[in-house]
Image 1: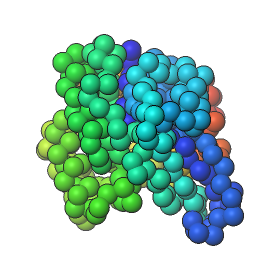
Image 2: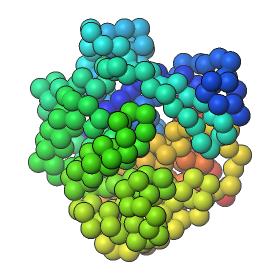
Image 3: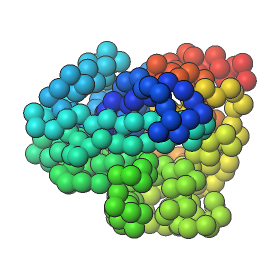
Image 4: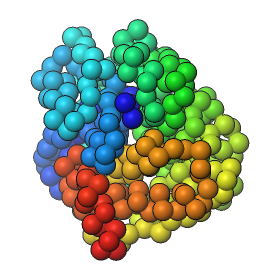
Length: 317
């Protein structure tokens, strides 16, 4: 297996209108979502063999989500069903296309109840890259399951990828979030953040200095998504900023997941010892293209491109 994504697959309730706050939206449409699940599908479409590990409710949404993953070619033998907890739901508003608002229905959500003993150890032990986000650190037992999955994957030499993916409403406050995220960073080889998450962790430091502080904690690579301004990377082999593609944005939800799927495909399939600017500049240009394509369609999974579509986009730009 090339890439295993661990964490939440959930129902995203997308707003019927863009330009309204959460309490102003008149209707919502259910769509499959969850950052690690989106990354798994994105990477699968780009040519990697991917699997998802996590827990859903023994309910209509849980079975629907598992079937969606299977239809997309994602291995689901690591999915567990919980009879006592519902599948997590995220209610989304888009006051503008680039800054969504989220409210999570998760008290508890089934994804938080994945236990270490429920992990598919054979799946994790042979993987090239393990990817997860901070939503798996908010509660037990999924937090312990995440650390155990890292231990198993690392024994097999896997790249460990951590998307900070900070969602304030799921934490008691920023201090709790910062404590759990900072505790995880030394276990990751790759950390992905956006500008707001970088500020949460490192205050108002300049981009290069803030990323350097993250690298100093143990990761080999830090990538920063900058929205309409492109992306940035830093490793102990160098750093650089990569320009964006100018497209008409219809929906920015999931663009970071699409970007991350592209990064992981390149590193998992082609190696991650070379993190020099000469390697990372074209790699992030490719990932920026995947994010830009995704932004042009409403909804995440329907918008994720194939490798052929990315190649065509790059030739046209």
